Amino acid sequence: MSKIKNIGVFTSGGDSPGMNAAIRAVVRTGLYYDLKVTGIMRGYDGMIGGDFVPMERKSVANIIQRGGTILKTARSDEFRTKEGRKKAFEQISKLNIDALVAIGGDGTFTGANYFIDEFNIPVMGLPGTIDNDLVGTDFTIGYDTAINTVVTAVDKIRDTAESHDRLFIVEVMGRDSGLIALRTGIGVGAEFILIPETRTDLKALLDRLGKGRKSKSSKIILVAEGDDAGGAFEIANAVKSKYPTIDTRVSILGHIQRGGPPSCMDRVLASRLGVAAVEALMEGRKGEMVGVVNQKIHYTPFGNAIKHISEANPDLLKIVEILSL
Ligand code: F6P
Image 1 (tube, protein in one colour):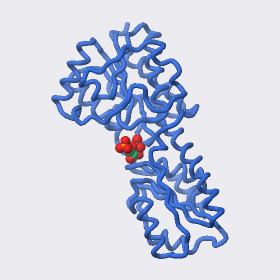
Image 2 (cartoon, rainbow, N blue to C red; image 1 turned 135 degrees about the vertical axis):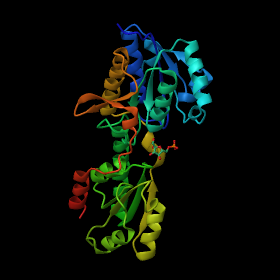
Image 3 (cartoon, rainbow, N blue to C red; image 1 turned 90 degrees about the vertical axis):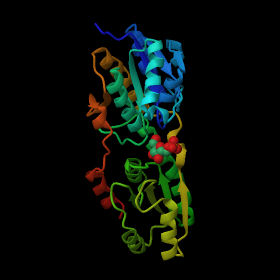
Image 4 (cartoon, protein in one colour; image 1 turned 180 degrees about the vertical axis):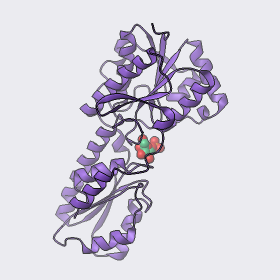
C-alpha cells in the first residue's frame, strides 16, 4: 500500500513541447490510483508563493496537443536559497502535499535534490527540455518536436539559399549542448555543423569552404548557440572577411524551437514517463529522473541525470564527415 496521498506537479526551467502531455499523464495517473493531485504554478516560484490549483480530470482535458505548459514555468532564484526552500516546504505542507513530480531539466533536478535532502520529501523528475542533454534517457520531452521544427525551418531556408546561390549560417538552440545542431544538421544535409562538444577550428572551416565543390550552389552551416567559435554572426563575419564574394546570410531560429504542438513521439514519451513517475512514487522511489532507454523505463538519480554530456555521439560525427562532402 502506497503511503502517498497528495502529489504536487510542476514545470520548471525552459518550457518544452510535451510538458502539457506530461502534466496530463501525471494528473490522470494520480486520479486513477485515487490520489489527490495539486498543480503548482510557475515552478519553484509558485511553490514558494503558495500558488496552487487542485487538478481534476477535466483540468487536463484538451491539452495533450498544446505546446507550452498550462502550469507556467520559471527559473527561481529564491529557491536557490535555503530560506526560499523552507518557505516552499511550509507552503506544500499546508496542503498536505506529500510527494512531487518535477518536470524540467538540470536546474529543476538540482533544486529537487536539495529539497529532498533538507525536507525528506519524495520527488521524481521527468526530463522536460528541448536540449536532450540529460543522462539516463534516450530522448527528453520536447526534443523531437524541436528538431522537427528546425528541420522544417532549414528546409525553407535551403529553398531560398539554392535560388540565390547563397551560404546560410543558421543558429539553433543549445547553450551547452550540440544535440539539436548535430541531429538536425544531418537531417537537413548541412555542409558544416558546429557544436560545443567539439572544438571548432575556424581556419580549417574557411579552408574547406574554399575547397568545397564549386557546383554546389547553396551551403548551410548549422551552429549551436553555445559553440566555442561564437554565434552565427561571428562565423558570418569570418566568412565575409575571407570570401567577400560569397553571398552570406544569417538566420537565428531562436524561441520558435521551444513552441508548437508536440510531435506524436513527444506526446507518447511524456505520457509513458508521467505514468511511470507516479507509479514510482507509489513504490517508494525518490530523487530520480524517469527516462526511456532502449524502449524501457529507466530511473537515474538526479545527481547523475544532470551530469553534462560532454562528448558527441561518434557515430553521428562520422556520418557528418562522410555525407557533407
Ligand atoms: O530550454 C533550453 C534552452 O533552450 C537552451 O538551449 C537555451 O540556451 C535556453 O533554453 C534559452 O532559454 P531562455 O530564453 O528561457 O533563457
